[in-house]
Length: 566
Image 1 (tube, rainbow, N blue to C red):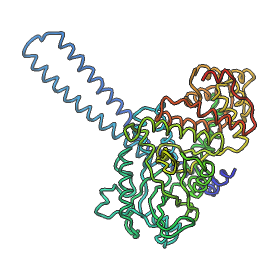
Image 2: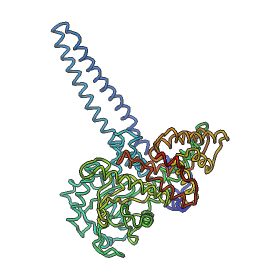
Image 3: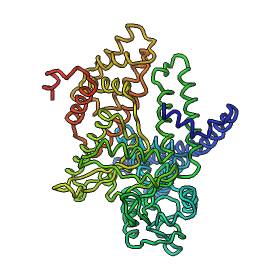
């Protein structure tokens, strides 16, 4: 309820008439349509051109085989045939170059269009790019760039935001480390743009920026300052405190997160449109989409997305996570400086380390198999604790939001994961959390029939007959049995697809809380499988489930048969 009230408070649509909302939504849909329109031409043309190039290669190969079987009829025809084959080879080569150029242009435009569309769509594509099992390698390879870097805003817009937060004397509070002049602006990339390099190369470029920051700190803030990273909601700079604040002395390295301008209206309009579309789809007869809780899921996504647009909420989230994981040596969260944080600016202790994306992209002497497996275990264990024990889940877990270092305060210097960008979180409340623990716990323990009965019992709407309910429960039981030795958390995507199909077929309305929590499991499972494909999550997930059941006073421990199967 607090999230809902907060969303209404900050939404620019709250004080508008229905006609004004429709007009604003119409203009937004036109803008999105214009962004998508070129893809409607580029993709079909690219597919046709690819088929032509592929067909040309096949015909060429067939011709060469036929030439090896048949003897030439005359010497004069040989010269003509050779010239004709040379001409065809030249045309095929030109078509292949055009195809490659158009393919690259299509992916580049799609990336630009998604960044231009705004934070809502960037978030969705960031999630999709973590799912190697659901999307093609080309899709994941191109859009995984959004996990690490998105286009930012200009330094002038940053200074305007800082003046609104701290006044015109903000330079006496924060000193930005790295500034560029006209001579080296070209080498550091376009101001407000994305890094020139991608993936691991972008991480190395960012590291070079940080190294230059350490050696070229400046007290003047007249020149543009290079951001060290940019996300869909804000971009981040490295800076130092000019004076002490609380326990943080002057000179302390901090990360300053500055919100992008003019994103609030975009996000609110996107959710208004998505809400209306979901409502229309749910009311179409015979589709039975009402039972997927599409509108409820959109509303929940809106309620957890809008608070991210107030950076004070992220600061409080960081405090909550630091409390929940206090004393753990392999998981950490940045410390926010509450006295310097406002709606548009967040200041937190700077985290030194290497992006998790480097470990996902490659395995080498610096990113060993052992380290990758350890990081997968740390990440999965952390998310399971968030879901089952704390009921406070980081809902934006992609590799770009995890920084890896060594905890030098512990013997052996074990790997440690810092989770950043904590503005997007999910919290259910005690009643919904108990239901979630029951359902997910049953699925993890392969009690499909029990999980189905719980879904029906907690559903706010069920128009199915007794036979429908029985078939729904037996259908989920069959999913668990057919999955064999695999576990719910090892194949979340398949489970969700099958469960949603059964819900529509038998008219059982799934709770949005279950769907959103399952998607959080799916995102982490996708990341963990990238790092450690052979990991069995049962040994990590089951203890969390049992602790949660004990915490809520629930019964139903796994049977001896279940234990022996492992």
